[in-house]
Every structure is written in C-alpha cells, then in structure tokens.
Image (tube, rainbow over all chains, first blue to last red):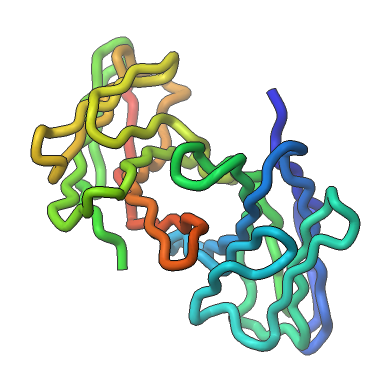
Length: 114
Length: 112
C-alpha cells in the first residue's frame, strides 16, 4: 500500500538555525498538509497546500515557516531561525481530493531544538 | 478548537468488541466524520469515515446517529495491536482544502 514518507526521522538543530523537513506524498495525491504535535499535546494543523500554493494556514504558521513543492514529488517545510518551542513531531499528510478521501499521514519527523 | 468530545480513556478485554463514542453536537450538514488512531511514535492512521450512513470496512464500523450529533466507532474484536489513541475528527474547510482539528482523543487500553 502506498504511503507518505518523511525524512529525516529525527532532526537535531541548534536554536537559530534553519531546518528543512522533507516529505514524499503519495504519488497521485493533490492536497498536502503539515501538522505538528508537541510532546504530550494535541496534533495541530499548520498549513494546507494545493496547486502549488498555500490554501490555508493556522496562526502557528507565521513568517518563520514556509512550504514548497520543489520538484513535483517532494513537499518540504522550512523553519527559519528555529526556536526552542519549535521542538515537536512534524507530520506530513496528503489526500487525493477533499473531504471524500482521507488524509494519509507519514510517521513524522521529530525535531529537537537545542 | 476541536468540535468533538470523547472520553479520555477506555479499557477493553482482548477479543471483545469495543464501542468508542464521540459527540459532535455542532456538526454542520457538510462535515464528514473521520476516525483516526495513533500508535506510539507513529503518525495518525486512518480508520474510517462517513457522512450520514453507517459504514463498514476491514478495520472497523462507524455508526452515525440519525441527527448526526454523535457517532460510535466499533472495533469488533479488540486485539493488543488496537491499543492506541483514537481521534474523532470533523473535517472543516474555509478555503477548499479540508484541515483536521484534532481533540485529545480516547486512549484505548486492551487487556490480555
């Protein structure tokens, strides 16, 4: 069964550095999402992406965040100038269509900011 | 904020059916009801979804109340591998893409 893959599984970065989290969505999917989960807390929506542009973003997704689909297969989340509070699990998800089809999640990247 | 309410935790014996309830009294006519589960150190895994009618798949059944204000996820025979946090989610959109608003879910413990 096709799946969403995320790399790396664990990223350790110094505070203030830039980090790029990578995702390969399922190949025929058109809608892409990033979520994050701080340890012990709820999964939170960050951003949705369709047709090479952001469709919706949450309050969390401020100017330090950006997303890109650079080559038609990868979907990346960039965090500029990371902060301690950015430490979390980041999940990528994709779906074929809107509400009719479910979102499929990757197993996440654990981001640790030191 | 999440528009669903679920019990924080439930327990079940192995091989027995489990009924996981969810209240969503403010559901709108176009909201789909999705169920996901999350095992430790993994991403949320799709279980089932529906709009109005009850749904069955290989993993579970979804019973939706006639007024759609509540639903129940039914695992017909719980196994130890079903121990996870189960999330009931209403997909919502303001832009054409459907974001999920997760609540705290129900932590299911399966006893051998």
